Amino acid sequence: MKAKVVLISGGSSGIGKSIGQFLKSKGFVVYGTTRSPEKYADFEHFKLVKMDVRDLESIRMAVEYIVKAEGRLDVLVNNAGIGITGPIEETPHEEIVGVFNTNFHGYLNTAKAVLPVMREQNAGLIINITSIAGYMGLPYRGIYSATKGAVELVTEALRMETKDFGVHITNLAPGDFATDIASGRYHAPVLEGSPYKTAYEQTLRQIDEGVEQGQDPIKVAHKVFSIINTDKPKVHYKVGSFMQRFSLILKKILPDKVYEKLLLNHYKL
Image 1 (cartoon, rainbow, N blue to C red):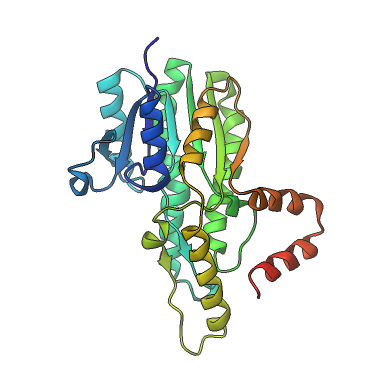
Image 2: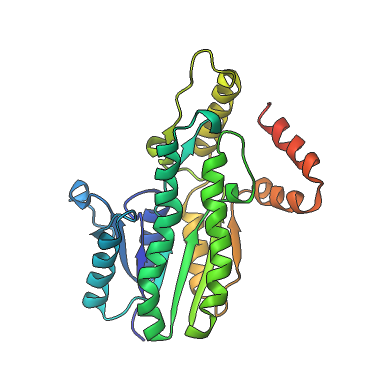
């Protein structure tokens, strides 16, 4: 049986890199994407191709290149994403649009680009890497939560629309993992005189500590591997610490205001 061909958007670092390395070790043909492959001239973990998820032509060319080289495309791991923090009132509109262009439109357009290939094969799998943050509106991360929550919902619809084509689509929501996402995240500036200054500074420190103390992203890679080897993937998967996963159970069973109070207490707001 031929090795499955996997495309991982945002594969040059962090979770995407871990997924790619692990899948390659398991015998998959792996292509990762990056906007700037010239920065990774010494990258030897798996093949990197140029792709910007904000650019439709870039996506088309990358998918076409892989299909021409391999003759098929079996798995898309939609992983490329950016973080954003800040008081919603003080976050510039262009930054909000920018993160939606990457985290939502980028995912959607990459999925749309591979669907004709997978439909023709009558086989394929799309795994959208979302976030546990997408299940709740987190203070000072509300825009990020919104982008990931939007992907979770559109995946539910897309699964039903493509059910007759042999294509499976699922979400995988990680909690906090030790990656370099903070370095590429847009931070709304902490403004002197802002009514949000003290609370935002405090929350920002807590967010960064959570990433620094996060788990090894190889756990996400193991989960991706498990999903690939599942005949009928579920709609939603989560991977993270016990408390992060348990927080989603609490959100389902607790009254909204009680859950809100738990979040406020957690962030000391």
